[in-house]
Amino acid sequence: MDTKYLPLIAKNIRKFRTKKGVSQDTLSKLAGVSFNTVTKIEAGDTPNPTIETVNKIAKALDVSIDLLMK
Image 1 (tube, rainbow, N blue to C red):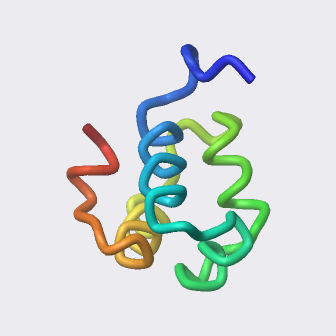
Image 2: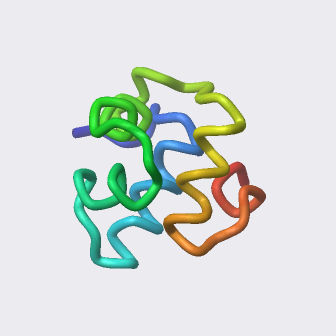
Image 3: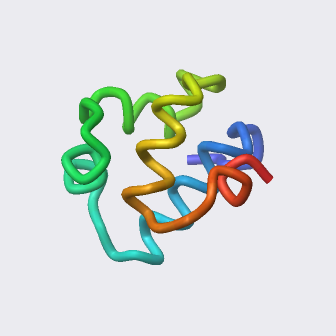
């Protein structure tokens, strides 16, 4: 998959998720969001997820929202 054109948030979520060593499924459970939501964000199909969703994912990954957005 060519990640060159993925939104920054998609790249960062994938980066921090793999760094933490968790699957998309595990992240969805930790964050309390659907598996479909996580896969769509990482695939770039949801380039602008809600701030609530980003906040949940950031908390699950133990990173700040700023880190996911930069």
